[in-house]
Structures are given as structure tokens and as C-alpha cells.
Image 1 (cartoon, rainbow, N blue to C red):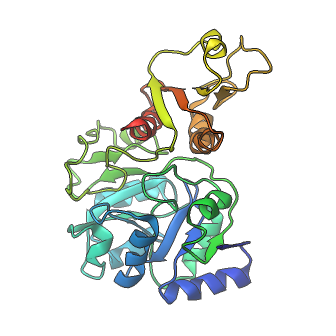
Image 2: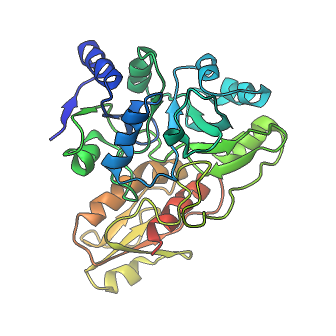
Length: 329
């Protein structure tokens, strides 16, 4: 079983050396926990796909310590610099033309690469001492609920890797927002995420194109998280785009769990099948708690989970994207 390590300087040195010798490490980020490998080592990155059971048409994100370091792996432009100045380090991933030093397995054979500078202080300390970028998708079996704690990683991949770096619970609880800026005159969101589209549009003073439709089978994605079924619990999940009432949940079978966006005001105090993501319905709290709540319900032996969708604005777009992919059959 994987060993969970605290972020001491001694442990960080150990993990950097382990990564330099083709090892895989579970690492914390402000979004979700990742499964990291040397992004410039094709053999090490192949281990990510094997450990996760990840299809080869789902590319990886390369994590770097700062904007200046991306020129080693891609060709930045003025828009990349503008966005990095505003949002890095943070939960924004940019798609840019790749350089040949990046192995094809990292980019699913495409001529572009996804790059991000993480803000999590533990991840930053780790990567600032590495001589290579780190490829790191979410540290979970492919298509299962993303991990937001070291214990989640151990539960899902503990028998596939040796080390997990503990950085506490993730701040955002959703993966990064991904924007394609290969053509700086036509930016496009490829994945809704922890950075709201509205913040990007305000920073650029323009409307940004929304994500394309889901991939066709075997089509290589420009960015991860584009497959129709993803982030899924084993328990059947159904969504409601209208509010659920506490009375409805209380009268339903106790084998059905109800996941509210906010704590219902009229529920009885002892109702074992009613759960909520936020006391007051704040979108940032809902996002931060979504994956951990889905895991908790999935482990509680319900037959069905019924969840409310969020409002279609700001972080609600990312929350609903995850819920809809999680509910996809």
C-alpha cells in the first residue's frame, strides 16, 4: 500500500529523486490530487496510463513552476503571458503549440500541449526543485470520482503507486479550467473548471467560445476531461434541473440518497438519506465539496443518488459539467 508522506524537506528530496527515476507520486494541488510523473520521460508517463487505466486519447497536463519555464515545452504567445500574469499560479490550464521535447504519449500525439502553474504551496515546493515539468492527471482510477485528499488517492491507487504527498484537502475541489489559446485571436474554453469563465472574459474584455461537443470514439482530445462519462460513482446517479423538496426526499425509499446544493430548511434533523453541499448554497463551497460528497455517498451502499444541478453561471457551469459526466451511462 502506498505510503503517505508529510511535506518535509527530506521527503520532498526523496520524491524528486523518485520522480527522476521514472516513479509515480500522488501529489496535492489546489484543484484535485494528481498522479505525477516526469513529463519529459515517455516511459514514466506510460506508467500513469497503466496505473489509472486511462485511454491513450486522453492527454495529460504538464505542470511548471512559473511562466518562464513553459518555453522549454511549448511556444507561448502574448495572450499566454497576459493570462499567466493574471491567473498563475492557479487553476488555469492553457493549450499551446508543443515542442518536440514533450513525448507524444503526453499529448496523445497532438501538436499541442496543456500547461499549468499550480498554486498549492506543497506542489510548488516539490516542482520548484525538479529539473523537469510534471505530468499529472487526477490520481484516481480512470472515470471514477476525482480525489480531493491523500486518503482518496490511497483508496483508489494505493496498490499501484509507492508514495502519496499529503497536502491536506484541496481548496477548489474541481479540476482546472482549460483554455485553448493556440490562436490568440480565437481563444476557446475546452473544459469548465475552478476558474470561472466570467473571470477570463473580464480579464480579456471579450466573450470566449464555449467548449465543443463531446468527443467521438477514439478521437484524441485537445484537453482532458472531454469524454462523455467521467468523474462517476459506482452508484447510479440521476440529476434534477429543478429543486428537490425535503418532503419528497423524506417520503422516498431510504435506499435513495438526495444531494441538495444547500441545506434544506424544512428537513427533519434525523433523516439519513438527505445530504447537502453547502449550508447557504455558495457555489465555491458546493464545488469544493462535490467530489468528496459523491465518494461518501458511493461508499454508503445506496441504490440511487439523486442530485440537484447548479445554476448555469460562474462555477455552476463546472459543477454541472462534472455532474452530467458523472451521471452519463
